Length: 297
Image (tube, rainbow, N blue to C red):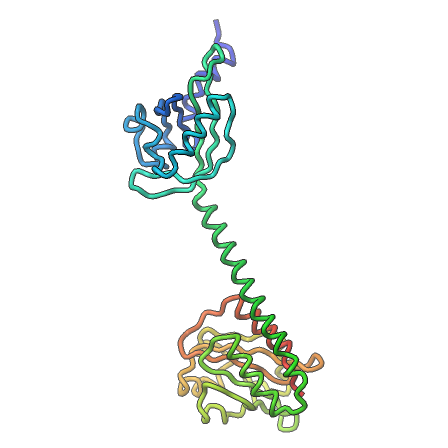
């Protein structure tokens, strides 16, 4: 007599459990482990021979014992526990984040005789959640910087003299963004050259520079509308004309923000770093907002 499909499925069940990616553990109502698949061995570090017959508290930290007692109480009532997130303890003492699904195990007569537990390692997901939280905190930091900028912008916009505005820009830049040096460059529409009009944290010799070309192009034809950053000024082709000046000043990284008036670039706010600096998104965004608000006339 050929076996029925149901019989075949029952015969395959142990193999399915053993090959599952998730840890599958069964225990009796007293919490004694009765089965332990290969994934449980990998996840918790105990072999089946070491785990079966021992209390499930083998992988539970003492301060979590009450959780296990509450789960067993629900199982005895015939309830299931779906996707319960907690932590468990590996053999080496390391804590791992897990998502648990626990279901009653019944005898052929329907009596609840134990529990089946499926554990999924969610450590990577927890790390991703933490990274998202940090990113949100960074966004809140950006918002704080921008609110400070908006609060200060009134005094800048109200200044009738350029000589007053430029130092105010530098003061605001220093308050919002950490750098080793700051400079406001302006494009002279008559001489067609860039020069530093206000600065902080750089030498007078460096500040006295005049630039008439960028990358071989006359400045009158060279404009940019987005922040220009260089983590290493030695490798940026556009900075060839300034390379030696950067070396003498000890500058390794820089970021230039276009300052626009009526949609046209009239100057740049430049941040200088004497150690190589990796620019974060929040720094670039803050500098972009800073550039938008500056009133060059």
